[in-house]
Length: 87
Image (cartoon, rainbow, N blue to C red; front, side):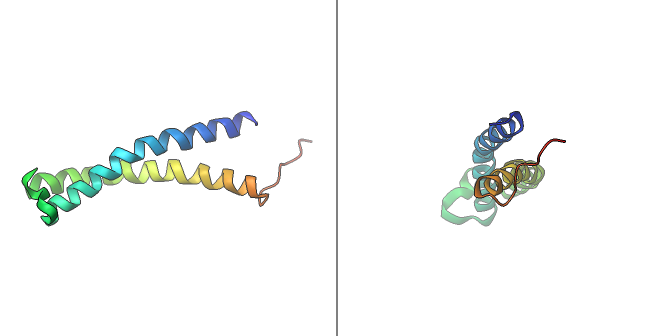
């Protein structure tokens, strides 16, 4: 495994772990704003909306940091991207 593949694999793993609480918080604040399942008791709607909006940028960055290397590694594994010969 090349150094690039090792770094990309670590990036996929770390970003995946960081995505878990961000996605959970994103869903939770959405349910709080909607008032479903009694989650509105945890936080008021205005605070939930503010927190929900603050999560957009971290969510987008982490999804990109997770998906782009994962797709590249999958394409390499499937043989769709070949190893380039050094000249």
